[in-house]
Image (tube, rainbow, N blue to C red; front, side):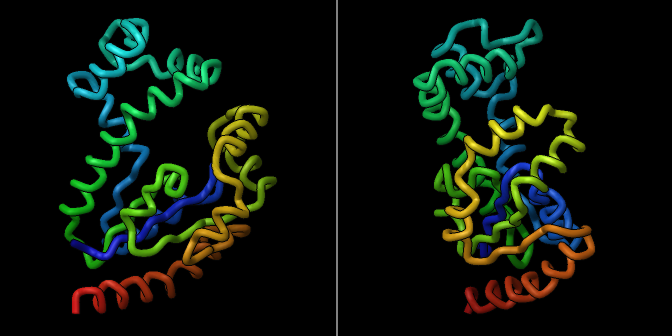
Length: 202
């Protein structure tokens, strides 16, 4: 079992840029968002369970999950969100554990926007928060995704407050400048994680 680093940050914080940097250092990255998409692909038992729970309207004509309809439904019905999470979270967690166990690198990064909210931090040895002010988050996310500011604010407010994440994280990188500034802060942390992963093997 490798040393596992949990990497998190809110929308527009630069979490993806950080995870790509770790990949460029030949560190395996397991992305919880990608896993979440994989477990609801056509033919997966998780999708069948969602269909049984909510009805056939959750499927598109091609058999894929109708994400938009489901997202709108759980926004209106808080109990529906809980029902959906009770199906998806265990499936996501099991798949993440399998991928972490299979990783062949000095340490492995689990990147997840909801690392603390879904208790995925329990799977890690150490956590790193990529942090940015709410103003910067909104600015970056609106430029990148073309989402309207109201939608971005909604996403931010559903996630754990920034101050709470800061309290929980072992390491914090403030990403308030250019990418070069972010990478400079990641280099010594990478060295630290390599050392920690070595000492955890002894």
